[in-house]
Image 1: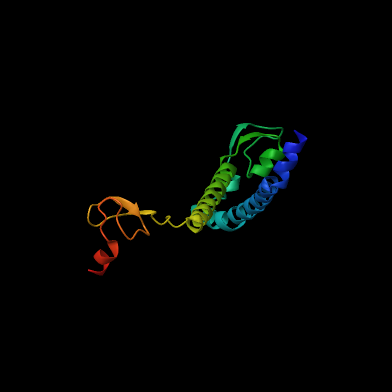
Image 2: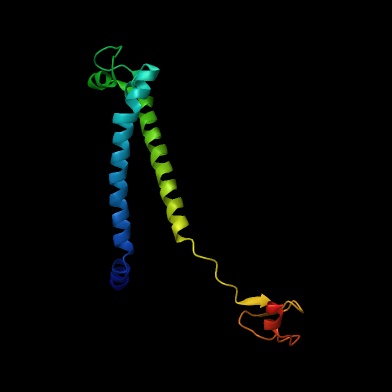
Length: 150
C-alpha cells in the first residue's frame, strides 16, 4: 500500500490536487473580499441597507433589543438568523461558480483536439470504402487519380 501511495504521489496527481486547492482558497478569498468590500456596499447604498446587517432576532440576549447591528446582537448574546450574511455568501458563490465556468470552458476549447483525419474514403465509382492513400479501388479496380484529374 505504501508503494502504491508513493507511485500516486510521484505521478503528480497529489501535487496537482494540492496546487488546485491552494489556488482555489486564494481565489475564494479574493472573490469574498470583492463581494464584501466592493460589490455589496454600492448595492446596499442603492437599496438603503447593508446586507451584512440584515438579520432576524430569534431570541433576545442578555440586553433587550432592538439591536441596531448584527454586532450589537452578537454582543448581547442574542440568537439571530443572519440572512444578509447568507446573501453575501450566495453572491460570492455565484461569482466564483461563473468564473470557474468561464475558466473550464476556455480550457476545454484549448484542449479540443482536431478531428482525426479519415483513414478511409469513398471510391467515386462504386462508393466502397477504400484507404485514403489508395490509387486503385480494391472493389471495382478503378484508377482513382484519373477521376481526380477529370
